[in-house]
Image 1 (cartoon, one colour):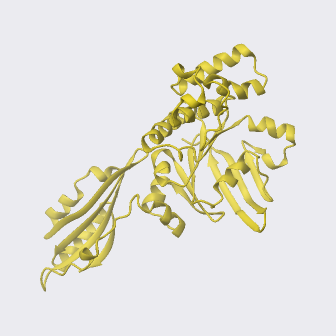
Image 2 (tube, rainbow, N blue to C red):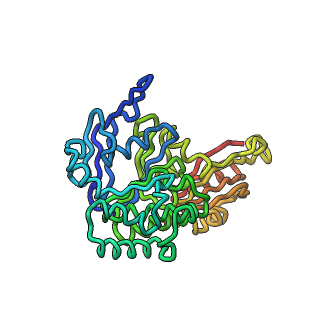
Length: 346
């Protein structure tokens, strides 16, 4: 879906000095393609919010450059920076709505500041209310809304000036799981309909898994790993990425399974973790293996999930048989495009 680089960070570093020095970003390099939903994930204190504030110019890096659609945000004077920010929408964890204004008034606010004509504001507000599904809440006040409705107002307000990019700073952290899904699906719909580039900052891998195309793992101010979501989830390379995906695809193996004895002196049993990605999830690979080789398979645990529109499955399987047959069965699984990991050799 991406079509060239829209946002680029080149060797960006940022240090804050309070009672001690905190290096929030360390030599960060990042390319965010146009039209994608790009996730940036990290634990609390990793530097995520600082990074996103550098993108919209709320923070100026100590060193490095931030390029948005060919414009170096670090070199703009205050007037040009304000103009540039109109092309960058932002939504927040705690909504930041004006309590004294109605839903329509909150959405209209950035348009009023920009000096848009009243008739054009009304037309744009109606259009955005329809987009986020809040036509019946135009005259309601924030205190009368649910958390999900407040965030929809926040999204509509962020889109008012027709930005090129939407920055989401922990935008679903204050919401329950069901509301989180509905807000994420709205963002995905906006991305699809408008071709809007969305940068999603979060500490929750489940949020990234739901709608992102690519993800960068940020840890202690450093980009540790960048790749497609399926790539990072299925094959995390760094410790930071492994920590972030833990719990989504990990299998907790009971100790008694690791201590299962061989069935006999001539037979060996191998405990395998199998990962199926894409169409392999729906193919009878294990039954094919059983037909071809003299082995038995005992499925001990299974989990199938969806990463955006790609199915992803993990199985814990015990395979028993003559050593050469077990070896051939494992080789067959690898040939079929199933990623295998020997957990223990019994």
